[in-house]
Image 1 (tube, rainbow, N blue to C red):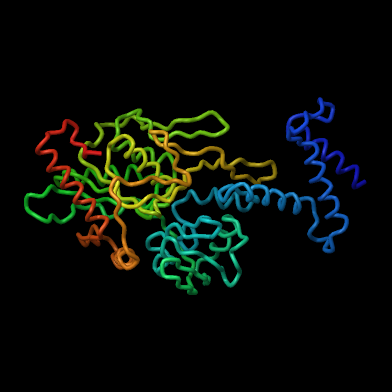
Image 2 (image 1 turned 60 degrees about the vertical axis):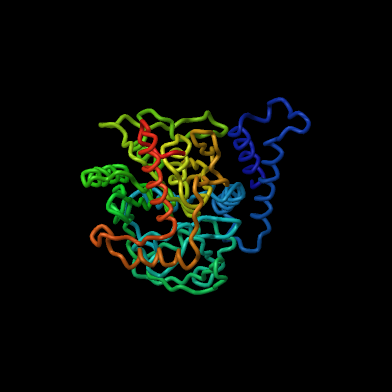
Length: 424
């Protein structure tokens, strides 16, 4: 009976991938689905027949295990999601969730924190971008997928969890005990006019985007309207530590500074390529000089914004080369409520530069020491609302951005540029 079941399973599996056993034989050297399916079917049969623990050999368990392995072996961002995981992912589009507030990814095979969200338990505990999570509650993360990691990091609000963290910058190994909380995802913060150094300096605005959510573009538009009414002459857009978010939101943010129907990013994969362009909006694009701050923790959506504004000569980039997460993941549901997240394409900037594993390089390189970075993040933890306090932490990267904008104004006075854009 078991052999008959497997023969039927193999037949239908072969048909699903493109035909039946009656098709013409494979040419020598050609990849054959039939031979490989036979190997998989035989392995499952042996496991069901001989594995010591018969509670672990159900067809569903074995199929799910095979899918997890297949997807995880492709790249760090492809994964298989059981029905509960898929449901949790769909719920993540809400503005709140329970957890630690840290964005994680695989970097060089190690589970790495891209960014601790502000006002979250991870941020308040002092976790930093680049920290490596070696253990969760004493369990090694070495073989965990991103999905499995997120499941372990999330849980009931108020529960405690211990992370064993390695900090490569200081070679410090330390346990952090955190308490899960409801995470409120911020978006646009710290919109204000920076204090001038001299009375004749241009009025430079500052806005920070922490990640790209559904309301980000509209929040940014309102913040810029307010700053313009205060006489803003130029803007610093801070995308440091921004892990990304919704692609459409990132494109809409570009639309604040670029003409309608401008190509911001394109995707290329095995499916036909696709372009994403700015939408038609009321009013003309904002044309004042613009500097974008980026660093090694600027990823995904923030790299799309930075890459587009750089390639289209709309902004100067100051800081460090970005993270290099520029691949497209498509989520495809399966009949039983599970799903696969599959990398299907890569993002390319308007100048056809690939983002994935390369990042976006700045025009002006400016770095922070470990102590300077810690001071910057500490100031953000201590400051409840920079807009109310009227000041932000002035760091070396921000100072270079201000210098660049002041230089653009001096250049403009001498050369009277038509667009008011900074030189690239």
